[in-house]
Image 1 (cartoon, one colour):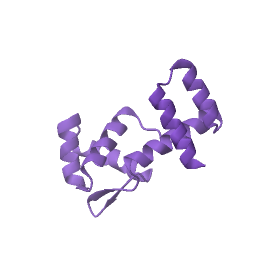
Image 2: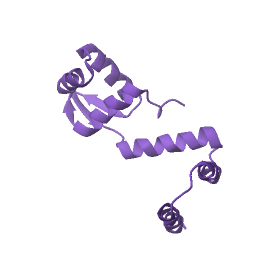
Image 3: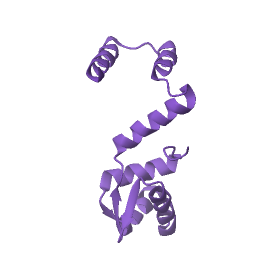
Image 4: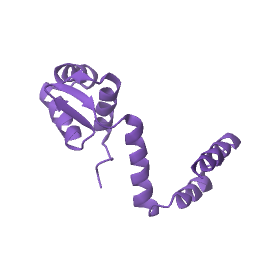
Length: 118
């Protein structure tokens, strides 16, 4: 499942769109030329890829957001946990906490989150 996995340049381009949307595709091509040194065709190719993945839409030359950056990041996290930890959030947290000690504040935030879910 590659829908929520982006390469480095795809991610930077997506971040640019999230920051400026809605934006004309022409203006987006100009911005990407300034930021990345891309030709117009490169920007349109990259935009088509992200639109094909249903992250953005390009309707009549206006690029709009179909999934917010926060929703996308949540889906990336869910995909990662599903692929690596067989969908088990407790297994992920166990593995994570073995390598990085959680602060008291992080622990409290997790407790509050769990209480809100109950």
